Length: 360
Image (cartoon, rainbow, N blue to C red; front, side):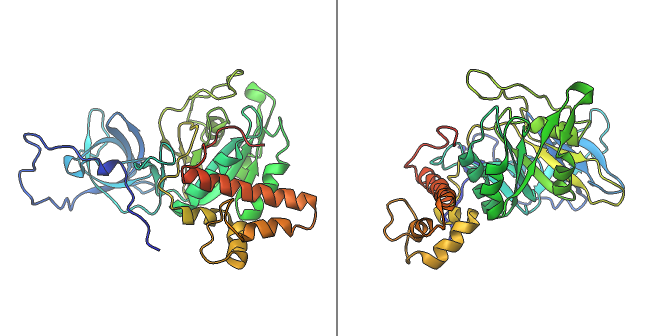
């Protein structure tokens, strides 16, 4: 089954005005362009790293060439630069090409929005940062991110924070069986004596890869980034005691290199602003089931042809799988997985509110 046409910001049309036409249809080849990695975006200016991880690595600032139109440039993009790429004060290079992206992480404002927002490019894995308490974890948000990662061709890593406040066992049992790697962290002490337990395990899971961190505000995402990259100085904030929501402290996505050992492959993390929802309008409903590896296997073996897997789908094998549980604990666990998938499916189809309340 072919996937439907996907839209993003570059598809928005603006009526051309005077002087908007190029003077010639012949575009320069820019054969002397230099390769660079985009590390940040700020009001039309792009922080880029020329010859990343190479012998002539240097930082500079660039703007987007007019011929790129409304095509969005995001952190993680590999681009071609012309102009002054020295990185000296006051210089400004020009981005003339965006190379083919290996992966693209997208989201929409909600599950019915036809316009996709490209968040980052060329990341290997999506790190879903979730607090075990303060704020409470939302399993539907986690599931949405897992589905988005799968759709983007990325691995999913669940980083559970604040294990000093709540037991991570339930979430570990829920996600490890479906192939999502889980790392648990907790903080001990305060100030200069503060220790983040689990940080070495997280660093090992990130080693040699480009990872994008996503999560609600207040879950400790910036705290982890500051521990991984001591020079990052990402702002951190507390959770509102009335709403249970965090205050947005990171205002833009930024790619940061994690200090590595000698001869170790480069490790990058891309920190993103906190989100309250993760729209999946760009994800085909048929692809959602593939984000739940355990359920996809059951459906392939037990569901009749044409099964929609929705709650009202007759003879759905997922219901039979739940009823075939060996005991009450297994039945509860299986039912929770099926319910999570069906809530996600209903939300994607516009028949249910997305992430209306914390899951229990």
